[in-house]
Image (cartoon, rainbow, N blue to C red; front, side, top):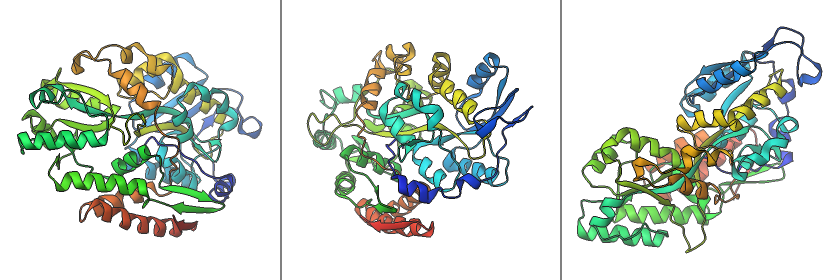
Length: 435
């Protein structure tokens, strides 16, 4: 999830105490490295590992920079094994100079001594990206990645079905969302207004909107607050909708069951990140013109708080001998107009402020009936609270929530994962307390 990462300097020191001694990676060159790893004489060759479609951007860079060559290696997505592959390669001294790292994974990779501080090379350019992405790429006031994309949350809805069931406008608040769902159920109980909250990432995104966080630090210790009032409010709300049969049990945009229900006119909305539009366009081509995009409903009228789900940065990995050149490429990938355009074509919503004004995002989208959906995404990205702190065991949290949600209620899952996360952080040898 594209959420804000904050970590104290003292905890940073605790987590990275052995980073300086970590082995060299797979960056190579034709001549001896320059002093202090800030650059080198002669041609530079660097590997970049990631799972997004970066091939054309790398080709563009290489064509314009003959003395700094990037070799792109496509790996599985981070949670699907990519991070393990990166960590294993670094341990063997054969890791890349650069890698695609999701925002929520940066603290985990830092604890493993996999990413390096690039503040001295990247700080001057950070004002070109949306603040939430900069915060999400930073730990303890230091920069550990150049932001690439963000996942602003919105409401996707079927305009034709809204008209059919007498709903004149998309719900602006969660109270209105429930009222609309009840209205639809009363008219036809086989039709669901939306989809259930089904995983830990979604629960985290909805909690972020409340302004509360699952983690914080006190001195050298983590505090785990997954079981907080904001999470409880979210969990109770969605459990109530599920218990009353107001939401479908299927997923959204990429779920075959959802697609089948949508084609039958049995589901009307889902809350998702901007990138979910790609799933609609690819899997539900026959519904072009029927879908629209609206702001994510809020808990209070007019509070304008939104959320984010997804997004990643380009990080320089431990052992990279040419960090200055690595950051130059990372900044190019995220800010060069043509590179950003290629990223947008590949389904990424840019973290770059200028990139969000690319003509391909500001014009009307035929799939959404000509609506300028980029305006909705941009507004959402600007309204993400800066109160979130990512923790050092994000994969454990996701896995534990999947298991807990599969056997009990959402509130029960919150209690269970609070306890399992404290245990998991203790196993890392870090100090941790219950929030």
